[in-house]
Image 1 (cartoon, rainbow, N blue to C red):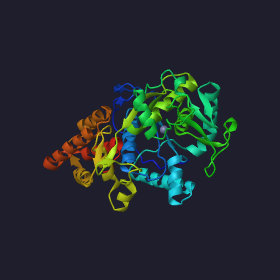
Image 2 (cartoon, helix red, strand yellow):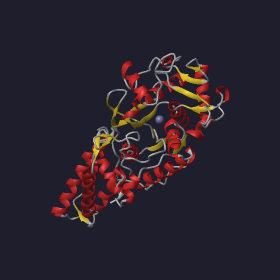
Image 3 (cartoon, helix red, strand yellow):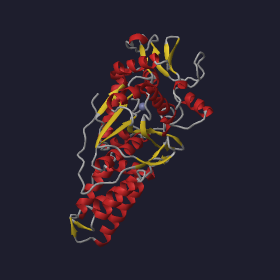
Image 4 (cartoon, rainbow, N blue to C red):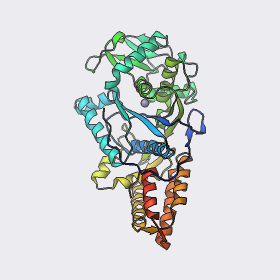
Length: 409
Ligand code: ZN
């Protein structure tokens, strides 16, 4: 699958610091030290109701990671998937009388437009579940051959007990795991499973559902966790630097993915860091497809909102916090964008070296974008109050805000 066009990232003088970020598996901050090529996997959308502010906030967080790594002199191999066949997609298609492939294509196209408008750097590999099936099937077959998977009425399940490190990503207890499994696409109540938490690897063909050739597995379609594992291992290999996503993916999705990969390869860890973005609420509830309380990037764009202001609104909240989207949040961002653009519109201004250092330091400290924004605010205030004698100061600020925050002034 193709991704979307990349905006050019200005190269800043000097080199940024390494990223210290909160790792869910360690339960604390951890400084990542990627090699010359940093490896990032971020779970993509299931293509319907794209792109709401919860999605946009998550992808903004990992876009900052990408930009920081570039600024530290590294290349970045970024992989993202699209779950273009799954129960929720098929259910939505059936409920609205739309062909599921059309729905997936239309929503993926909309997502690409939104990502381009928000200046998100594109993944090098943007991979759909359907196109990855020939890679997913052998992964399941190998798990089965290793005794880590079993059949149940034609379906195939992963045995969580085959991984002695199961639980090492979330650290959750069995009761919470069971509760979350039921909430987030698992089937802990299904009779005949070895462990209630065991997730589906392969769902045998059902009448009226799409299915593909699964070799020794028979016709069917893949489970969600193994989809990401097959794609990540194919393009990044074990021990990649960051597995990212929203905090609702900690369990079961990222826990199961890590277990699948660790059992499959005998290596640990699957990822050096598990990084999770908070949830964005609207009108008192988590923004989600099931609640129907979505604020869409495309709708705001249609209403004439500058995508740079949407991006600033997202950056105004720390990525790990849960927060609420309101009209005031957007109004503040629009005003801030206008202040910044006014401040950089003259050739002279206060020196920018210190500001570039402040933005770098704030972002390297667990992606503290609100602190980076506050530093630019202070520079803009000084510029408006005193102006300054240094030619090129505003230009340097505008390049730094572009390169590190992805906002074009
Ligand atoms: Zn995933």
